[in-house]
Length: 387
Image (cartoon, rainbow, N blue to C red; front, side):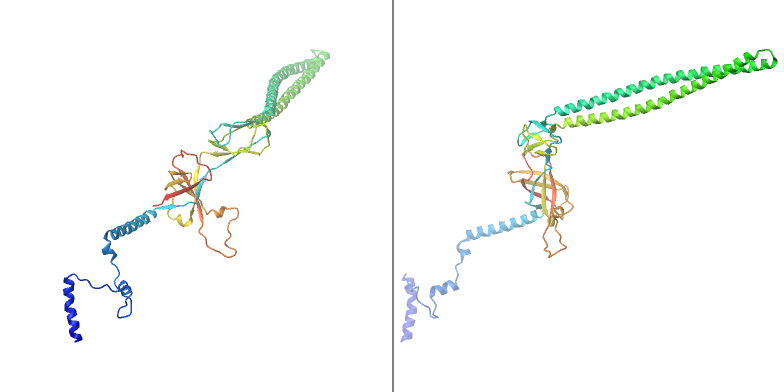
């Protein structure tokens, strides 16, 4: 009987569905024959099909994933061609402007951070004492030149005396020759008895006098000639005094020029400590001067230098001007890491050793002078194209 009842219910179910009669909803808390809630078993065994239910969302997510993958691949392929670092800054050879002489400052011609050209006056020191020293040195030069002129004139006069002495020697020589002839003739005549003894003695006396006159003239000529050497020595001494005086004048002139301090190159005056009326001492720092010629000092890791060479192009961004990009090129790579030239270099041969990637300074210069103000120490980020 039960079997007939179940068969009748199964045959009646299609007719109920055809007539639109719905089956009663089973309680969500009801358990299945295996003891599990019906909803939990359905959720575990039949997950919802998101791809089928949301095709557009799935397509968008897949497209985004694909684009991100392509972008990552392109970025990796492109990043291999560049090396960059944020451990970089603007560098320049700053000039310390100091006093080379002592004196009171009479004028400070520049103000803080003022831009000046090469040769422009920065400050002046009182030059009255140095003007006097220059005039004194110039007077010494004039005195030495006058001494040289005097010695030259004396040498000329002495040469004239020598000529006169030499002529006296020649005259005495001629007289001596005549006296010798007269003495010889009188001796012969006396031997023949045709002259007197007195005349022969007179000729012999004249011969001795002329000989003495010749000796005197020769000695006088020799003395006049020796005086030339004395005058020449005085001339050399005067020339040495002139050179000494000229050196003193040059030094005084150079010292005078140091009373006016000028800009060595084009740049900016900064950190000015000098003031009008201040007494400056030699070696005292009065201001700092920053030249316009600046470059980038980039500290790359040693692992980034494999393909880096001088001449490679560089894109430079400055933190102070984020919207600008400057162009330059690698000028040189330092022959050694930064720590190797520090005040206290690392001594890896002692104690425990921990390997640390070292940084090597690379000098990067601008292709064109920047049209903005760049000062030492400003942070930059250079990107070098190494491939």
